[in-house]
Length: 281
Image (cartoon, rainbow, N blue to C red; front, top):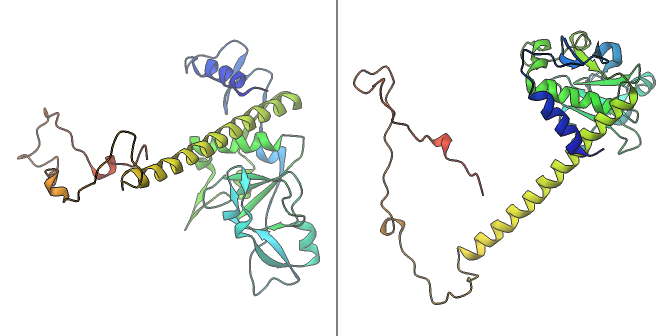
């Protein structure tokens, strides 16, 4: 499926007035969705299980590789931080990851998720992660994108428990509502379109990173004179910055409630440190 087709359909739906429900759609607790879609919950569509508690003093058994929170990034698994944990025979069965398992961060960046596609033969996971396995055929890739949408829109914040750190308990996670496309074929098509978009974005990011590296190399050569542009020759001179430009430090803005400085009709703006970025480098 071409990404631009899905994008065009989404743009058309997004253009609809927020208070209007288009023909063929209905309003639900998850927003406006097609009439033939339904609404379910994460707990109704997935078996959710937290991983093994990491306790070196209490854990007994054979050492096995395991994943923690940092290994689960959006859409991919990072094996650089993989560790070892001792597991009993029952633990080996209970916490072993299977191909297609969806892993979701319970704390930290709550909701961050990736699918385990068995980059290594055997691996387990820590209690800081939820493992999701479909009960009724809900597409894991589609669920991953649902989580990304809910995390970026702030929906998941309604289900987070805030103690010393924010975390998403299993009982609350199970109640999170999700839209369910009417057929497995449509679920797979949506997931495929979004995956294609991810691949395109990743390729563009890699191209951009390469172009930035090329520019850095060009800057190093051109700004030091190691490489000259066509038509230019002769020696460079060395001078001080103050001989080339007038340097002046900015003023400090006063509190807006200071009657001497505050003028409600003033349109004078300030350039702050945070306004100066490295954009374009």
